[in-house]
Length: 282
Image 1 (cartoon, rainbow, N blue to C red):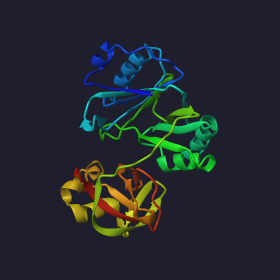
Image 2: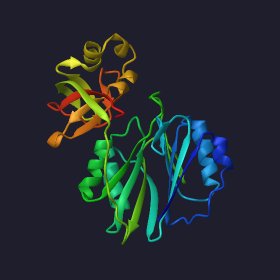
Image 3: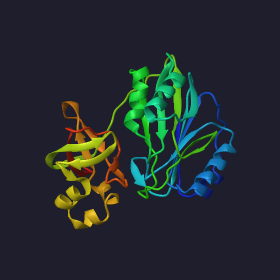
Image 4: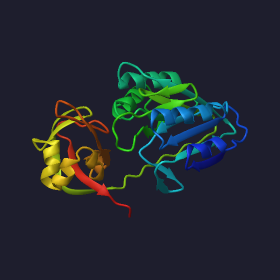
């Protein structure tokens, strides 16, 4: 297996890059772009499709390359396998749970070692999506994430070699008899403050914590400056859910709804325990 990682500071740099010859069936190309407007995504898409290879991609809220965070760049990872085959497709069903079921039934076989998913970032319920996959195949390894737009919370995109999408999920499956996949995770959000209880929620829509409106809660504990810019400011102090055996699960607040609720990055239930957190670079 060979991996080639490249970062491009501008779209023009990407246009001028000379890609190596690649086989369609045994190559996985992943694209993360900080150029997230529709016109920019179309431009990047056209550059990539002109190379006549298959890929999955997503807009971001920041790119990571060689262990460092960047803004306004394009990161491409090319994985060339010797004994593995890659399949790519886009899915959207009537709800995210059903989308997950369709993904698992369509993409997961006895030889599938991993599914890599990039989901639209504002309306996709990642929890429901993963639970739908697990309802069909609970042993499959799942990786990936949700699209971003640098906190604008207006429109995100995912894409593959067949199109650009503002709904649904693009999926790459890697299938092999010999490939070994190892998983790990990292959450550098450090919990602070008291443990609080979710008192009103509906899946990934959060209304109240400790019987208080979420925005008012942030105002009470974190001040007027945070409340004035809420919910964008909440990314600096996201909620973390205390899961089974004390595992912390990120529950960022993504956007406000007209009914006073807030969409969160993952489901919450009444009775769940949560805390504020902050980014701990150490």
